[in-house]
Length: 168
Image (cartoon, rainbow, N blue to C red):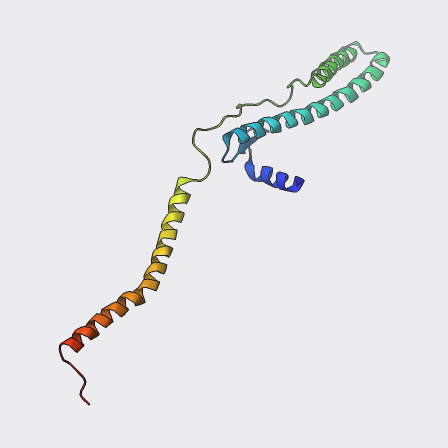
């Protein structure tokens, strides 16, 4: 279902805000490096599409406003500034409609490590150690009575063989 896919993606993606800049670092944790690379590429493409739509909407509304106000402007410096802003807005519209990456830059391309992220070696070793202790304790507990039963039986047989009998 959609909820299962969304839960799996939320479990795989780790978002870390960058402290000095207005950005977010997106990491992926999975046992399959190719799946992480593909997911990060898809996330980047979707973020770029959203930012392009936002840029297009902002630039088109600014362009409409400036195109409506520019003919009525009489001050030459303000008219020149508005014309520059209109040209910039139209450039943003063109870049957004071509799906060019004009806003979100990928600082580091998606890469995968040669070492797997899961399972972590210290986790595997600590769990195996604890499992060994538990299994050892269980085996010792259940075999303890069997061993002592043999020891007591052997001692009884030796005592009976030596002639130590109870006298009534």
